[in-house]
Image 1 (tube, rainbow, N blue to C red):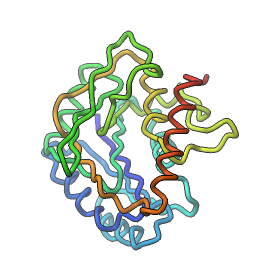
Image 2: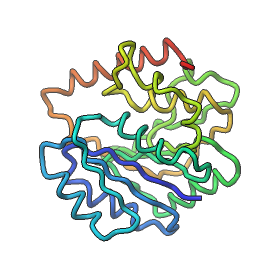
Image 3: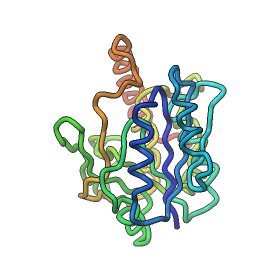
Image 4: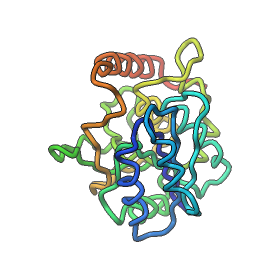
Length: 236
């Protein structure tokens, strides 16, 4: 069993080395890292190539078209979906892990039979954590959001999820609000859900990936995505 970290990156050159250091310093070596540059406007792509060069555990992907986080994660994770022993973990390119036992903590839960696992996290300015447990019997689409921020799942679960769940009514992949668009279909498929009350993820609140003049628009699009995903539920 291994944990594959998928990290979509956009204008994250200042944070990539911090992210990789936090993964490379894991005590448990059962991990791989996939770094994806999503048409950054800075030197993120060259930084990813430099840091991954000669490293057997780190794969660099340099996109030739803009895909945004959700599509990057799903398409990359689907390359592992035939292996039930591969666990996918999403870590944004400007965030990082903050617990050197993260890999062993996560994999131990999957060894017990879990299908979806998430952990407590902290924001770099106040340590706030919004992750909570989700009872097995509830409908994820109507339950308050609680699976944030280190989100993990068995790659094989994607075989039972149509891409329609990750797209709008016109068939376009969601650009914002990807966390709920990704996790709600996964949570819908199983009651083997586990919230780990250990802080493993540090969220960078001062991310530079979204320019200040576009943040209001981004937040509005995120809310729109979440409302649509929750209203229509799971799509077969």
